[in-house]
Structure formats: C-alpha cells, structure tokens
Image (cartoon, rainbow, N blue to C red; front, side):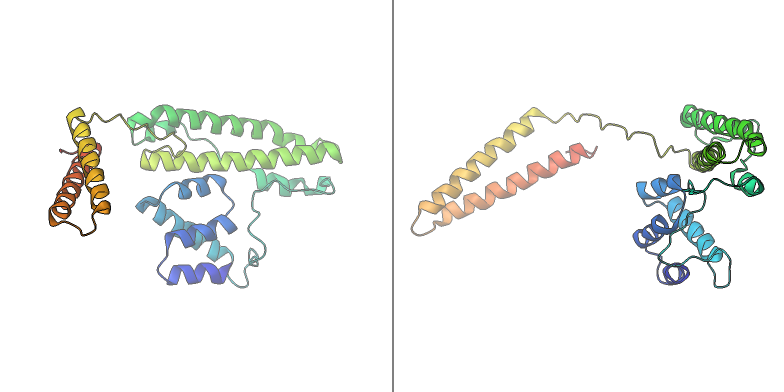
Length: 250
C-alpha cells in the first residue's frame, strides 16, 4: 500500500487511479461514495489528503503498515470467533469512543438551501452518539460469551456509522452540497414546433434524394448538389435545437 500511494502522489495524481487506491485501502464508506460521485477541486484535494494520511500510517516500520493483499480494516465490524474477554473491554472502549457533538454546529452550514439536509444528518449523528454513550457502560457488566460479543459488535457498528455521519456533516457544511441528495430532474425544454417540422421535412427530402441517387446509373450533379444542400440544412437545424436544449438561443 505504501508504495502504491507514494507512486500516485509522485506521478500526476490521476483522480481515477487515486480513487481506486482509496476504495481498496480506505475504510470510510461515505468518503468513498462522495469521491465516486464526481471529480471536483474539493474532492481532488480530499483524495490527496486521505491517501497521504494512509501512506503516513503505512510507512515502513509503522505499526499500522499493511501489505497490498490486506486492505485497511479500521473500524470495520469484527468477525469475532471468540467473544472478547473482560480484560479486552478497555480496547473496545477506545475503538468505539464517539465524537462529542458540538452545540449549534448546524449553524455552520454554508448554504441555507441545504439546512434541512444538514439538520437530518445532525439528528442521525446525535442519535448514534446517544446510543453509543448508553451502551458503553455495559461493557464492564455484560457477561463474557455471546452477550458480550453481540454488544461489542453493535458498538463497533455504531462507531463506524457515527464517524461516517461526521464526515458527511463536515462535507456538507464546507461545500453546501449533500452528496446523497437526488439529482434534480431536468426541466422540459420547449422547442419551436415549426423547427421540428422543418427538420422532419428536410430529412424526408434528403432521404428521397439519396434514394434517387442510388437508382441513377451515373450520378447527376444536380442530385449530388441537392443532397449536399439538404445535409447542410439538417446540420444547421440540429445545431439550433441543440442550442435550445442547452439553454441558449437558436
């Protein structure tokens, strides 16, 4: 992983290549979704920052180093064969320690139009935080075995969800964009009916001229000139319609 990221950072930083590396080694599903949505200046910088962090964590001699065959598993739900012993509770506590919500954080939204979406993400984030806080004390009192395994797995899931909600919140307040929002439907474009009819008539005339040309033993210059004229007219009409659809003038 270290070599793959270092090569990317030192060789042009192609966005799609970097995205492929992060999707393979990264651990944050929200960030993967956000980066896959589109290539923007914000996302390019974010991708560089994330890969730099991964490379620093995977530097030779670093405990966090991982081989190319083993993508990062940080914060993923553990597949526990044996339930954690009571002595492991402190480690689980550290793993699932939630981020404390900030008061009035919603007011940091940069785009008023996105405020309802920010409020929704904030509510989800605070709910996961509250559940984490409520469940954590039970780590010290839950009997070892299956009950403790279930509790630890639930805590890790909540911690991952909480972290992803924070990432989504930060992205929305920095950019004013909700990456999960549905794309707006394109408004219908009103095209002059006369222009549409004209295009259809030119197509018919062009088709007749081309059919007539096929039947001629020797192509007549008059027919060739007519075909060229109709093709140019058709191209002009198509250009006008394309400009109207793009929001311009015909």
